[in-house]
Length: 602
Ligand SMILES: [Zn+2]
Image 1 (cartoon, rainbow, N blue to C red):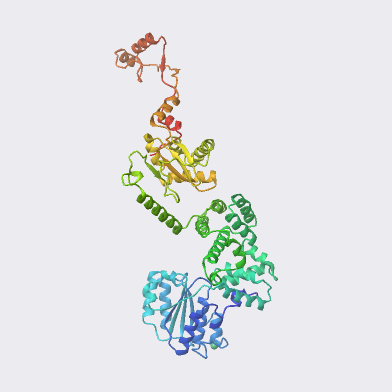
Image 2 (cartoon, helix red, strand yellow):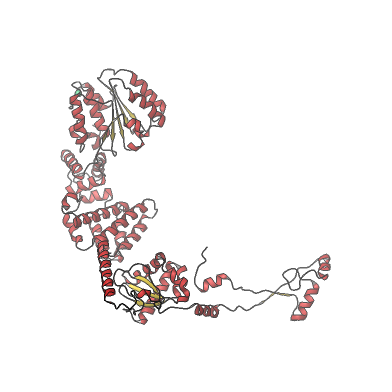
C-alpha cells in the first residue's frame, strides 16, 4: 500500500477525535441529537486546525444511514462515500478557485435539485472569504431561503472579509489553536502507534513549531521522521526545524544580562553557521524573556509559563540576575528587531546590532520610585523655605544675579543650583581628555553638532551628570542642547565612553568661548589666499569688434572683452601685457562651514 502522510492517515473520523475543539463538537453533537439543525455553518480558525475535517464529520453525521446522529458509523455506504470524497450529495467547493458569480450560479442550480440518495444535500465551501462580492450576493439569496434539505458549511481563515449579511445567516464557530499539551498528546499517540521513538522534548519542539496547527504538527513529524527515521533525536528535530540549541540561547541571554557586548558576535557566528532561522531565534529569546517576567511577577507562575523544551529551573537562574525594567526593555527591542528582520536582506546584521545594543540596556528606576524621590525633594524644599528668614528671597532662582540654569531632562536625584560649585569626580586633565573624545565621538555621530559643542567647555563630571559651560553671549549654541534630541546624541557618546548613562547639563556659569573669541578665532583661521596671475590671451577679434572696442564701449579690465585701448591703459598701469587677473581661490561660505566643521542646514 502506498505511503499515506500522517495528517491524512490520522484525520479524525468522529467528533471525539477532533483535538481541542470540544466547545464546537459538543454543540454540534447536541444539535444533532435534538434535531435543531441550522442551514448555514461558518467555521473560523487558522489553517490545519480541523475546520474541513469537522465539516466532513458533520456531513457524515447528517447523512449516515443511522442518522442524523452525533456518532456517524463510518461503515455505511454514505459515510464511506463522504470519507473517500465521492458522495453525490456532499459537494466540496474551493472558494479560492471558484470565486466568481458564475461558479456560485452553478452551485445555486445544484441547490435546486433534491439530494440523489441521501437525507441532505451538503455544500462545504472552503476559503469562503475568497468569493467576490457578486458571488457573495448570489450566495446570500440561497442562504436567505434555502430548500428544506440543504446545508451549507463554510470554512474560512479570514472571517473579517465575509459580508455581515452572510455572517448573520450562519451559525459561527471559532476553532481554537491547539495548545502545546493537546498537540504533544496527539503526537505522542501517533508516534506510539506508528512505533516512532522520540522524546517528550522533541514532541514539544514539534508542537511549538506548528504554531497551534494540528496538521502542521503532523506534517512536521512526518518531515523529521522522513529525515532520520526512528529513533528521532532532539538534535534531529532542531536541525530539521531550524531551532537553535538551548545552550546558544542560554549564552545569548547570559551575555545580555551580564552586558558582554563582545560575546554577541561570536555567538551569532555560531547561530548562523549552524543554519538556524534567525527570526525564530529572535522569537525564542522573546519567549524566554516573557517567561522570566512571568516568573518574576506572577504568584502562580506555573499556570502562565509557556515552557516547551526547557524547565522552570532553567529560567530561575536568570530571574535574580536581571530587573523587570531591563527585561521589558530587551523584550520590546527584540519585538522591533524581529519585525525589521522580516523585510531585510541582511537579517543577521540587524539582529547583531540590536543584541549588541541590548547588552547596554541599563536598569532604569521605575516610575513609582522616581515619583517618590520627587516628592521627597519637594518636601525638603518646603522645609528649607519654611526655615529661611522672611527678609531673604523666598526662592533662590528669583534672584536676578543667579545665572540661568537648564537641564536637558529632569534630574533623578539631587538638584544642584548654579550658585553652588558643582563637585566634579574627574580632574581637569581627565575632563579635557574626555572632552576631546566626546567631540570626536559627536563628530562621527552628528557632525553638524560639533561646531556648537566646541564653543562650550567641560565644567564638571559627576556620577550621573556632565556639565558643559557656555558663554551667555552664545546662548544659541547652548539652546541647541536644550533640545533633547541633540542632548541625546551627546549622552549616547558619553554612554559609550563612560559605560554608564550620564545626563548632559548646560550652564552659563564657567562659560566657554564668547562671540568675540569665536570671531577672533575665525579671523585667525581664515586662509589668506594670495592672488596669483594666470596667463590669459584675449580672443582674436574681428575688425568690427575692434572698431567698437576702440570706441570705448567696453569697460577697461572688466570681465567683458578687453578693447585695445583698455589693454593699453592696463599695460601702462601694471607693466604687464596681455594678462588678465583673477583670484585662483575664493573664500566661500563652504570655507567657513569647513572651518567650524559644520554643515549647511536648509
Ligand atoms: Zn454511517
